[in-house]
Amino acid sequence: MDNSNMMCDLESGVCGAAEEDAVQEIDLNLAPKTITLYYVTDPICSHCWALEPVFNRFIQEYGQYFHLKILMGGLLPSWKGFSDGGNGIQKPSDVAEHWKEVGEHSRMPIDGSLWHTDPVLSSYPPSRVFKVIQNKFPGRAADFLRRAREAVFVSNLNIGADEVLIRMVDRLGLDGEQIVGEAALGAAQELLDEDFEMVSRLGVRGFPTIIMVNEDNKGVKIVGARPLEAYVQALSQISTQGVTPGRAPRLAQWIKGEHKLFSKEIEVMYEIPADAVEAYIKSELPENSYQVERIMNELYVEQLSS
Image (cartoon, rainbow, N blue to C red; front, side, top):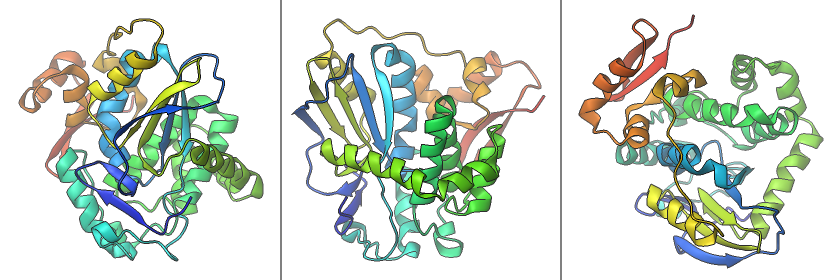
């Protein structure tokens, strides 16, 4: 993928090449058996973090209609030759202000000061760890990606560093040293290169991009962080049957993912206003089973360890 003219645009919600239509009809000869949803992303894609509330709800309510395939896109191979002229980003410290804007716009908290103190030099290390986990423990891959995002955006941790990655993988109940060690080998890069090849075949130039393809090899590509209605409409467009939303998970079940749930995520999932979130949490969760805190002026809830 050519990273020489990358941009991150606040209005379009895209980290990637500029001047691409948000919703496009496509025709791909991929021969899926059922509807397949390709989610092209990157661990340090700020607009992917902004999409979390909507995408989580879409998966919960409509996941029964598609097979989800998460692909790594390779946002930052290295800083050598990297350019995001639209946001004035030429070096790591330039990212901090852009991330701050995305966080304020989306209300998914982003600190961003690590770009001044301990910058991520490449998004490939966490991407390779993701691929190793996806290959060996597919049920834990999405959990790792969520933890990686929370670590870099909220906790201000350099997820390109081995010691940070090892701790995150250990917290999943997996062997961090072994998996991070495997991620440094050529076989892990080969898995990542396979994703890059598929991303190229799909014609993806920015993140997040979501592509849904049906059994007739017809699909829809949605570029950037969009409202829930855009994804539901796209799914309905290519489905051979009517689509009906399933039930959102109860908060007591959702919080068992053992990560922070931010106010914006709860607002979107349950269609409640921001000023009602704390009362909703109190009504849904057993007393003394959780803690409510604030970070960067945003409320979050976290399950207490038993």
